[in-house]
Amino acid sequence: MSNDYQPHILISNDDGYLAPGLLALVNAIRPLGRVTVIAPEQNHSGASNSLTLSRPLSIHRVAGGERDGFLFINGTPTDCVHIAMTGFLDEKPDLVVSGINQGENMGEDTLYSGTVAAAVEGVMFGVPGVAFSQIDRGWNLVDDAAKAAHDIVAQMLASKLTHTEGAATLLNVNIPNRPYADLGRWRVTRLGNRHHSQPVVVQKSPRGDEIYWIGAAGDAKDRSEGTDFHAINEGCISITPMQLDLTHHARLAALRANGWDRG
Image (cartoon, helix red, strand yellow):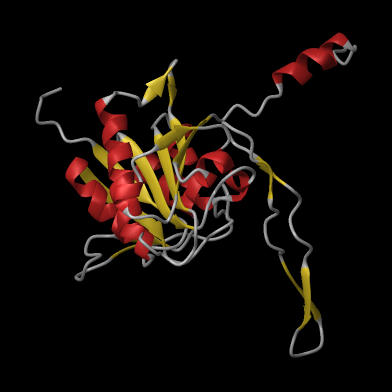
């Protein structure tokens, strides 16, 4: 590989192609390589790893303006990365970067997050992925968060930390809403966990039918030292390495030891 090689970075999100967090991230990452942006047409927060299988999808390109060249799809974050990996791009990118999400993705949030899902989809195809989220909603200081995201991606590329033990690296990064000068402290963390979600909100539709809104996420339950919640409470950026293996290996051994293997 020549010294002037520019890594190809695929950028997506779950807040939609018009989201300020996506634009800030793209502008910050452009100096690091060749960037392709493929994002959902609309907000898909909470979409997790869903694929659209019930209808065809279309890709459109933005012409002009500060998002010139952005591509958007009438589907989910996973759709965006999946289509890129399975035929739209001539070759796989070197890295998938997702975000910057409006609001934290910590603890169990990662199971629901479309932001994390876009990075996960890259990893499923052997391409390392990084998901970025800003703690507080509202896009306050998002350009500062994007500068910090640049630094993290730059270090990842420079340190060759794209694959470990043969598997593509997956990082979940949460950034406090602080000025860039205050974002120099990074902590490598594990996922904490939350209390159960708040109760569903029940309302009446204009026709008198009951309608339901999903309740707010539960408060942090495990915010002990070493967790993502603890790092954020300390004013640090939280960087959590994740993996796709959902097997509970200790439980696997216990089941076998208790005779669950038959035949």
